[in-house]
Amino acid sequence: MVKGGKRLEGEVKVSGAKNAALPILVSSLLVDGWNTYHNVPRLMDIESTKVLLSKLGADLETDGHEVRINARGFNNHEAPYDLVRKMRASILVLGPILARLKKARVSLPGGCAIGARPINLHLKGLARLGAKIDLQHGYVEAEAQQLKGNEIYLDVATVTGTENLMMAAVLAEGTTVLRNAAREPEIKALADVLVQMGADISGAGTSIMVINGVPELKPVSVSILPDRIETGTLMVAAALTQGDVTLVGCEPAHLEAVTHKLRLTGADVVSRGSSIRVRGPAEIASVDIKTLAYPGFPTDMQAQFMVLMSVAKGLSMISETIFENRFIHVSELKRMGADINVSGNTALIKGVPQLSGAPVMATDLRASASLVLAGLAARGTTEVRRVYHLDRGYESLEKKLALLGADIYREKE
Ligand code: EPU
Image (cartoon, rainbow, N blue to C red; front, top):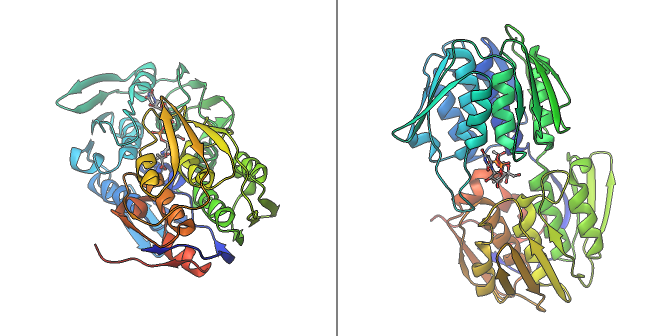
């Protein structure tokens, strides 16, 4: 439940990045021995990953935000449908299973609320590394006695596809060149961990990555980088409420596109070291955005930015170019009084003076965050249902917002 109208003020610490933690925890499968991970966010998707890794035979220990994983007992090559359907990122185990156990059987993830989300490029890439791939009964069945390095060109710079291929290539024989690799900070974070394990990778964070295979890797102790999408979500919350919020423990360099657009809305954004201070404008100016792969404006921030534009002065245009169905929050925002028209992959938003609180339904992770933000700015009370979507990727969002002065609490469903 969110009662709108409160100005957010104060300081809050950002959690570790979900989309970095997922592949990094999975990379523990590449080595025998205890790996230690610090600053792991406490999220449903992290829990799902831990269940999957333990199902594959790894030993795990958790103490707050520290997770330890040892893949010494890793001997199961199958990731079942029941786990993969809960979290698409489970497909990340395909590369490591194949690299270590020579064969893998991983359920196909299927579509999700935001789009079809195929994994054809993960599979094509693994085939280029010499894997024999079959699709049987809803599962990917892959086999390779020894993966061999090769040139791989990705038609689309897929994030988890790049990560899967990196984890397969580090233990392959010879050199792999990944062209049109994804450049998200989470890719560089995974590469840093793999290099610390003893892998030979250059070019991570650029679109051409060169990986020289090594025979084996060693365990590591690493810390997960801050979550740039959680940071961006809280930055929008500050701008939306005419607030004055400082986010600490974040990485401003990963938020340049979001910062740039927020400044155009009139917000005052100042970064210093690992903190960002956002002061919201008295009147929000309309700004157009187009989602793009990093370093462009992130699709994972599109729904939140749309809420800001819903109460801006004037007309703004938001184009979603990454996922084909990522406007599902629009109908809920309209129920709160937003004036939005969607045509194809473009939304036209005519700012209204104020939204009005309503019962709304969360449909996916970032859409649910956007509804919470809308509630902060709306007149009256907003009840966001199905908040489990939020718990997949935000650690205690309502507590962080309450700390900043929001009138928000969780009711048991
Ligand atoms: N694509 C293909 N073929 C493939 C793989 C992807 O055509 O084999 C297409 C997709 O359909 C999409 C585009 O490539 O149009 C980009 O998708 P990508 O594969 O990069 O997305 P992803 O790896 O499945 C990750 C994040 C998403 C984030 C996207 C885009 C993780 C675990 N997930 O997904 O995060 O939106 O990159 O940045 O890293 C979220 O956190 O809410 C979330 C959805």
